Length: 373
Ligand SMILES: *Cc1c(COP(=O)(O)O)cnc(C)c1O
Image (cartoon, rainbow, N blue to C red; front, side):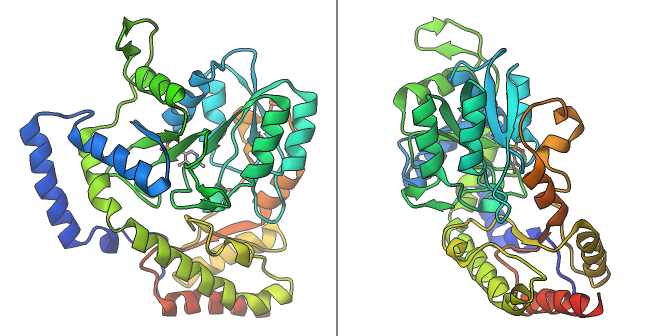
């Protein structure tokens, strides 16, 4: 049985494509190619869905993170904390504004930032901000992180690139007071037909600053400071608005798939062969990815190859801890738990169109792999 990691053919079904084609005709007839009417409609729709006051579309999530750092006036000489497990854009944005990333080690079970480790870092470095990441779509422990930030007086910028639809105890990711950055890269849970991103916040002043920075520094008072170009194409906004209609149902389907995987892994978990995210996460994660932990790196690489031979596509997200990547090696912070996590983690296929028999097949192949090991 073939189990691919993504299923774009089912996602972009003929009726959706028809609808998108009609909408793109409108975009072209309007001669509005950046920041058109669909941009405003989409910003409003995101605010409603994610219970936020302000949404500003930008070029991509990496830009969103850089703009958020600029809103907080972060630049050379400033320290910004980042977890040791993420896609490297979470640290790239810090370096790109001239600041210094400091690595915070992760919870060895989830790969999420460990608040105790953040406190330790905050005592040692005069942090200007922290960028917690809702990695794999799992909700980061925001209540604890926000509290630490308040105590030590630094900003919180959430990297929610994988977390559209993720739920925190306080509401959806994006509903709080922080600047929260989303990605609509095509492989994310809600993907454009190219690059796009967004920043959500409840803070009006910050939202205004984002609007100015993303559009070359232009403001209602004229040009006071240079900004940059990170506008969102009208075409991408139109595509995303069309795709948004199916998103809530797809989000639910991911949860159903995650629940089935978790049920199927019960015996392998009790035998200590596999660890999966706890059942508490079934309803709260966006399930952008379904990560499993195996005992060590050697077993992980063997399982990856074994599943490939059985036509099951898995991904090594992330093969290395953030702090071990070449451009990160000279930056301070702790790396041990992140390194161990990266050695052990393997991501299984999860998407809204994954069938029960496919989940059954994947978990059965993994069971067979461990009996033969
Ligand atoms: C994808 C991703 C980004 C970058 O998003 P882009 O829209 O491609 O710039 C940042 N952080 C995380 C955790 C991601 O997964």
